Image (cartoon, rainbow, N blue to C red):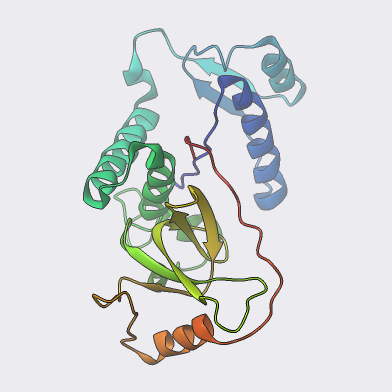
Length: 231
């Protein structure tokens, strides 16, 4: 039940996503895919992908058109992710262009939630063999204050307000509405803002983060990932 989400702009990108995932799983976990089940979408029945499956000894299993019940597990998972995505977007009141970030966050949360198929544990724990760090969980769409990296003069602002929209490998994904781009940051304070825009700390950990946010230093410029309207 462990789930990974990949966002693509065009269906032509699906082939490379499938190939890269199968290769990565084999290298990472030593697992070999023996069967690939899917519907009859054009992105799955292309000649190039079929030849690649044959070269890897992977059997393709296409469902009968208009019978989604034959692919029940995937359909139920899609419904669970979509329901959670709608709830996240509704609660956060973010523009629809952020749907991609909401989908990835929904999968992130599902991977860290117990299921009937994994009693007493979670999908991410089954996949990695380690308990997830739930202290990182934050409310999707909440305000976030992150340190501004790069060369700064003495009186330049040391931090900036963003909107939390997801999780990265070593930090958080934050939406900058002014510049319309996603940045990644580690030192972040969430939702602790006074009416005048200042931030307040509620525990020692946040005190340390706030000191880092406003300290006077010179660091290399951080080059964040940039997303388009589809994430």
